Image (cartoon, rainbow, N blue to C red; front, side, top):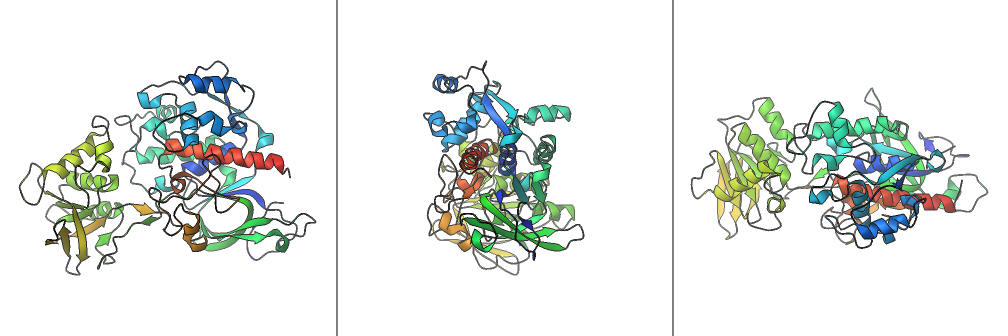
Length: 478
């Protein structure tokens, strides 16, 4: 019997679960699909547009992609990800998609139940993770078809719903529903335990846990609690040979760390503005809403406020022409609404009246403090200070993963072990072909935690993890 224990309970006679996945977003769902015995093979009659990859695939037609040398297959591939396995899996599923092609996947899937690895997926929300927390009408940055998971194209699901894409992109509501449908359609729900909060992951010696006459090994103890229907918290302990971190980065919004940031009118989520408009506490005649940040979430807030005719002061540290600014990297034709925000940021400043009413752009400014009287002090690049009276503030400068359940908040696992884990600047250090943490064997990291920040590329990480776990299972059969 595998170990899924509600504390306290006698552990004698239990075996550790082979795999526990923490996080039930796209990364966790895709990995669950692969670990459930769904095995990808190269279609015999397919012709991949990459001739070298085609030749490599033809060398082992009867061998699944999971059982091949991923480093060999991915060698020489180029694209929008730094992960070689992410590029490999993406180009197998969507050949030449970056060039506007719509070629079919060159993969075929076989359900080999004897190769399934028992596992459990833990998540706070319904399957889909953070997608259930995003305002439903928001559209994805990526093209809609790139949001799909293996062997169930998103476009096909959308057609069944008799809905289409918006400028080739999907709404957050559709994506969240698709991920829930995917789990049901593929029969994965038995592996998912939703409404769970993990509070601790640590290694234990198996000698102290099980009365087996076997070689002593280390296993992970995963502690936390289930949220019951009645709202109670029921504690649990799970023992696992391998743990996969797939929690994403939306748990903990980034704070500026300035005086007054904890005041009630300062918020760190876009939903606060939506709620304020809904209950009429913010409106056309209000003092301006302060929006801090120059990313896409900040742009969504600007668009929402502009649509509601609410005055906005938009503060951000970068130059508008900074090549690192996300707006300077997006095709104008594909993202007209974000291009509009970028134009507003360029053309409207506090020094002169521009074409956009009720919007003020303050590039190369930073917030110094928030006052109890709702007066906010800014400083420009030359050190000059300005004071504005505002109605509410939205600090939308990104978010960080919540890894408080790991020793030292997971910092020891990062590329730079002196700094907190950050998906863009300091991800968890993993082997690029297995995604196993270099500092902790048996612990894996997926998705943004490992530096893969787009759904189309997190799936390659799932492929790498599944390949590694299957090879471990073959070496150590139960």
